[in-house]
Image (cartoon, rainbow, N blue to C red; front, side, top):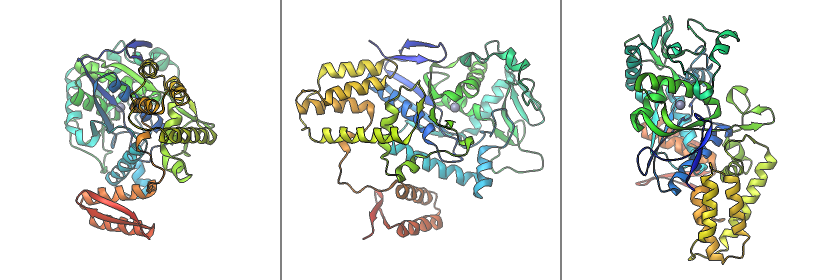
Length: 458
Ligand SMILES: [Zn+2]
């Protein structure tokens, strides 16, 4: 049975075949770095990591691109309101650039704590302004844009199938709700380039053929994915909240420029639910991975919790469920440690595990196969080798785990990474300040040829 994935575009489970033999292009929408990620955001990245590992299990070489949105993501999807970066800057008093740097480091720290495989490429929106301007200029040449007082907009009326991914009811959208249009002609039209407000200077702004300003949010993903993966690549992922606006707009732009729907498969991870509802930053209160770590939770226990729910079902988050995941992970580690090395995997168990993974990443069922093996009467060395195979997809780092290693608390590791970033930016004053802060927290930092080393102070 080949790998089958649920494609949001066709609303069907489709057998996966890459466009180019043995190679897969995978683009995943990354974070907007104006604040910390919450664990709901992180659930999407866990799903995408499992997808990448499942593709590798099937023998594909994956080119995995993740963007960092550091400009252009407005507070409201309706193209009004403030840029999230500038808003973050007002909140903290730091520059928008410093905020972007700080939250990128923090995000990548969470990424590694969850044992997500490093992408082939991280790309920042602000490093690709020229590509975005070129993209918009092509859209203009092809007749898909119009100008208003505050920017250049995409004219969605030019496409009969605009919004197909989301099965949008365009007529209903136009007629029904009262949508704040501003100067836009239609509710579904969206900004490609926004002008800096007259008489003011933004922290992040660039020259363009249309005037000084900054790119809209959606254009960055179309421009960067096409640059690094081509105008039609295999799989585009994101959270389910991206379907109606962000991904619909990425497709519209790409159709208008390249005549493709950007990706052959569109996959979407579902939300993490707190009792109050969907977890979103705009709701004010949200839970960070760091918050959990400070309560004694192993980040990989959160990963285990995510694996226990199918990515296309919403997962209700409770501390009890997380405690349960931590306990299960503890039992698994304990069992694993008692098994000797030197065995060979059990082919039948590996085949059953892979069949579940290949069925649209059915990790809950794959975990059930894992526990059958743990509790089986297979020789202990066979169990170890079999579970090692499973862990290539599960990513629980079973072979690396030791009870007795000195664990560096995540808050300390984060300070050290910020110091590393400050040193890389030759910001010596900030690097020294962070060294002192680490010392105050009881950690000595030493710089070696291989980078900095942390030791607890006696
Ligand atoms: Zn995107």
